[in-house]
Length: 253
Image (cartoon, rainbow, N blue to C red):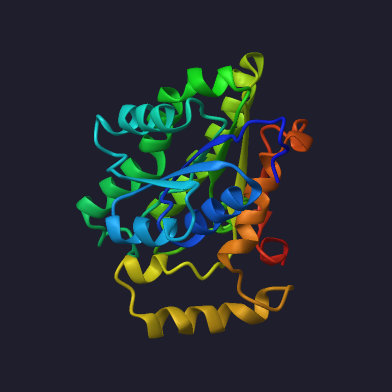
């Protein structure tokens, strides 16, 4: 928990209504921080904040040109500061080259890559004032030399996000801002269903992948949330530019 002498930090989490974002919001709130969860679904946001007065909500589209300023202004109005920005919001699509839907391609690039760039830029001055931390949520399926068939656009955006993590870590260190990345593995967050995949199909994918995971289980959102909170702790101050796979060992098999 935050000590009585230390004011609660202001946390911003995009895609905070469900899955990893919601679990991360709860973990920060349980620590004693104040959290702004941003998402497109008011119902999901309300559920994320239920019973947790430290969690505030903002229904907004971060791909809208006015979105980054709205998020930053809301956080500063609510908390007076931004100590941690978690770029978690993402959308995905499933198809091979030759069958890609241009609308889906643009949505993935705009949500997963362009929006984090512009939001982090908009939040830079408050983050610098707080000697803050940016945590980018990537994907363990896209690190190293792995391919991600039928999810190439999604993978490309996540590879790009990892490149931003490393570059920003160097660029922003003189301003006291750290940038780190988390690369979750196979985590049951419901994102595939929200992208239109039938639940039974997704369950089949999970079952097929399970034997390859050394940990012997599919990940849960809380597994990733723990790492996000840990990397934003003052004790993690020497970690900068790193992208950490949280995938039960799948990426090294």
